[in-house]
Length: 188
Image 1 (cartoon, rainbow, N blue to C red):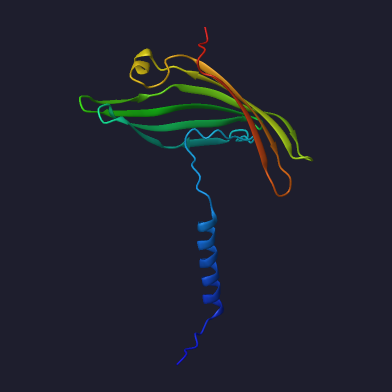
Image 2: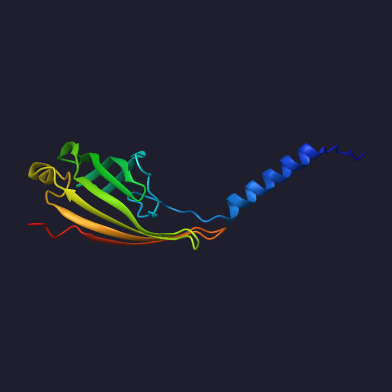
């Protein structure tokens, strides 16, 4: 009448792992990470080190039935090179595409956004305490006034800076940043 199930150790671990996975999925909170991710640490590429970053951002906005919908696609590209062990130099740009469709209008704009040139300098590092401090200034250069009228870039020069702190104890890596951005004041 009763059947005895034969559980091997492998099937026991597989069931335990499955139960742990289901519990982890049920107990986690949803998170949303979108561009731009404002995180950074004091780490650099090292002398003659290189890094290429490529990402994709997509957004869709519906204003009203009459106004229609706007779809934006951004593909930012960042090229970084290590000038020394404590200094990186980078340049970045974004390929942008804006599609607008409404009851009476339909448009498509595509082109490069503002170009950013910057550096990351780790000016303090204490290997004993694991504390390091970094400074990251950036200048964003406009592409053209024509791009600005089409919604691609700001059409003016702007700048910003980030001060970052990193502390590496044995089990935890703590990173704090303080971004400062001036994007509305043109440089003359």
